[in-house]
Length: 254
Image: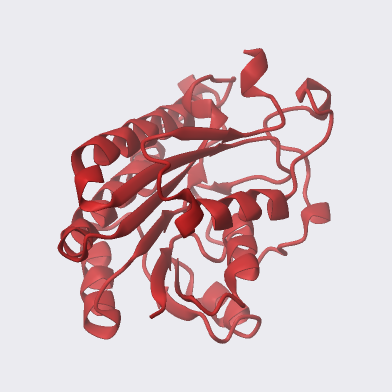
């Protein structure tokens, strides 16, 4: 029987690469979530066998509607990948409360609500994997990343709490901390309908200069996706409550 995967941020760069690597796995049914209807239309042409749902994760009522539709149409979620995230990328004194609240809702409140909604079925079925996509900025920080770092640190804390409280139901909760990739996250005020390419070569460097990475190269999104494929598989079911770093050694030198 196929396992249902719910993937947020599915039209973003990492989201597309996750879908690409899981698309031909017959054991999964992928339900992709994005806030942008136009991007869903564009990527549906590439991945027609993915089930697509529109949801703006900043709004509690839309998250609840998403949950109700999934339960009605698919009955349950076996694997929840909280991948959606946005950034502000401004100096701390230049950010405003509205931007902070938008970021906090997408990066932390939405994963919190989705976990809370889907956990009861996971408990009933005595099966579940929750994978929260975080960042090395959960344990360190750089200029122009205060709010983002806060949200990712809290997401890792949520991961550990879920692992400890619900592991007895065969539910594992993992935090994947990535860094060193090419490209920028979606800005908190971005409303573009243009679907970004999933290709690694079309992006400027982001956050960490390449010569600051011990491996002296950028991570590519296939590498991150391969790790994600492993972490949601049966081979990784004994991994629980961990914050795993895939960053070329960035965190090791802090």
